[in-house]
Length: 263
Image (cartoon, rainbow, N blue to C red; front, side, top):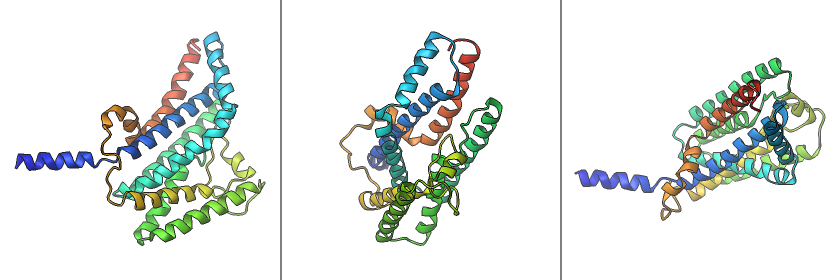
């Protein structure tokens, strides 16, 4: 009996889809890095040579062609992976509400921080708000057993409509401010803004990939020893916690170092 249980546990471990955790973790590490560079560039004034050196490096990175060329791709990969992860989720509503709640917490904190510091880092509809809304939309569709062909059609439609309005460079939009990118919306959430369209399309694309590629919910790379990649997969498994902690700890630690004169 013990041998049977051990074999069952081993099979369960082998079925862990580590590559999804790895991709999500890798993208999250980029997000943490990008936010840290933002903090050094825009949030604080550094008086020490070390602080000014790091701030100069961060500013060069923030305005570099490398960041401009890669940023949206990393975020896009993270959104696609988030959609793909829904295949393995037991409760999409609960998971999405948790992500949306974390986004609302960031809204409260950034509004309070901006009021105290007088700097425009307000995030009223950032990546967590967007992902939470995408997850809720999918949870509703999933409850109606939405077929894969319809998921594909919705993905294409959301991408087409979203990028069309993005290209218009609108100053105003009569609909929901969080739905499309416009100058008004960018001013409404200046610290970070990710509209529901076109990103809902990429989320649906991830759902479709997950439904087609991982319908059996097992890894496609069972031959890889996950322990060598565990630092990144650990971040991926706890991406929301790392996102929130990196935001709070990053800003808090920099504030303390600046106040005591170390940066």
